[in-house]
Length: 135
Picture 1: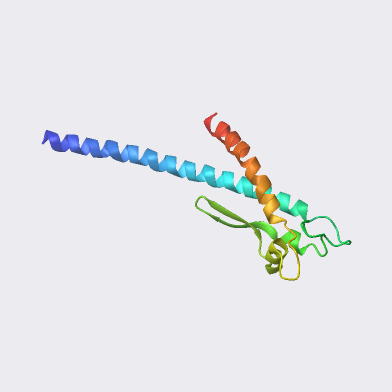
Picture 2: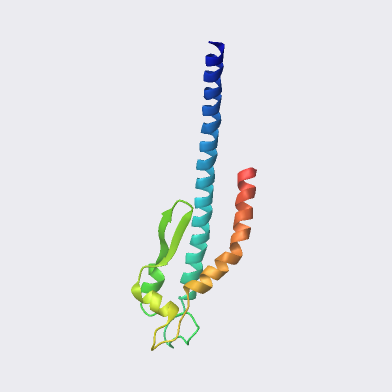
């Protein structure tokens, strides 16, 4: 009988510690997702800035595309948020062709340079978030 009660106490203690781990998992998930959203937001802002230069003249190969209507700039946003993943970019078909180029047009990259800049900023974002969480 004593062993059974001890077993119940053990299970109750285990459930409490499991609950704590579940809470830690939720907190980590929330913090990491929030950090990724912050990084994606910076990427969106950088990419939008890259395509703000007005047309004319047309952009040269290797330069970001120039703004004609503003549709490309306005389409750049966070597209999808999932567990430990945030997708950002443009949902316009021609954004891909501008970024990668075609058989008749050399690339006008705007997302890749923004992504590269965010990847350089990410360690600092991560460190600042760590300091906020542990303070």
